[in-house]
Length: 355
Length: 253
Image (cartoon, rainbow over all chains, first blue to last red; front, side, top):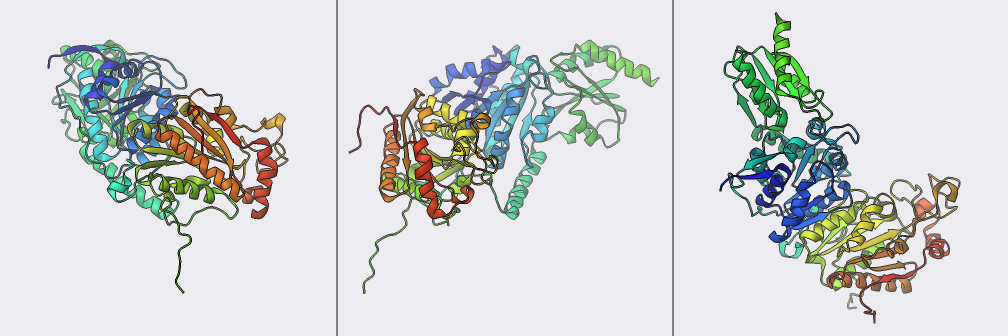
């Protein structure tokens, strides 16, 4: 199918429909409002469910109910709203209920602002809720990749019986870009879910319970060990990244999402001046793509982490680096989107400092 | 002599031992809900939602598919379930700490949207499981572990009446407060539960049955005194009766 020009939030909404989303529950918050607005118009014509909840807290618990009863479910929000959903996300992970959560990030902390940011990295990758749990988290850099990942996420959520988080930001949500909605296959049918509380205990012959409560500590430890082995499987199977011009470079950027997009322009500008820079672009931010750092050329001496925050992913880079390379950081925050020239200047000043 | 079965447990509950204290009415209410589900042939097609509090383990007791919700969120969970399974019977089972305090927004808005679900609301005027703290439903003067001198209006306000409050919500269809302190009232309570599930089966919308319940352990009195205390102290403030019936004039019996 031909590409169509779409606004990011609307493209994400349509991708969810294409991915087989049965139900959406959400609450208004800027800068993601076009997403629920689009679904409020189009879910009905597909015979699917749209509910505007009374709060983010209620919305994520509706997700828990619908997902636990076997539906493919989506909620979307932006940073402070995602913070409110954390309790429910912990329950979803603990009860192994699949769902997809889109976070169109904005600046924080607190009410913060409504401009794009990447300052929820810790909240997303460390889990803002209680307990030993993880969500699969993907951070696309353009609308085509966002659409493809959202479509796939419903299947991944079902496969792992786990929440999947899409780490978008206000830039991706508000920009317009051509997208091919059919580039990847549409998944309309969900797999069988023999664990789901579908209200068919008679037909099934046994009763299903969607539960995260284990009062006996030995049972709870066993449950956690089972979850952990699943998270380890995700770490083996879902590390995703792109390497850009790393083959001959001396300085490697580490950047995801909108920041990676900006960094691409900086790479072009620097290379035209003969500065050999490249980039590791994490596509999965949990699991963090440690593999990407394993086979860098000998010419590399520095990893420059770039974020639209004051440094969150850099902690993962530090963990992965293990002292191999010099680490440096550049970030803007609060909704300020840096210009490629700022990254160019940062790199040139690093080279100057190294002399 | 031939043995004759005069009583046997119904199929609406599992054979797990209930986790409730002597003198608590959760057991009676569980049994009534289980009986109604069995008699209406709904067990195999029902999805229940347990809440947080003493009834947190109710997902082990009701013999149907169950969800265990976060504190106060059962009506939101039930909304999610019902919206994707509109032909299944969906109920929540919640206490007063869960429903009237932390979950007030969820219950009001589930009623407000007219969700076609049934809520079993058990009001014993105290937080039982966490150790007897003051609830929004705790009576004036009632001593709890967080109102050790008795609840004072000036400090903690007056107890919330949930059925009356929800009666002002346009979306609510059927609201009744009942008690299970004697056999006559137990029978009446069962009728109320039947009515509530009828409302749901007929897709008439939101129904809630509030039960005046007991907590002898946290009230600090004997089980046999507890029902009397509920009758003498709770029912005057939380009167029994139907607070809303928007089913279109269909009367019981």
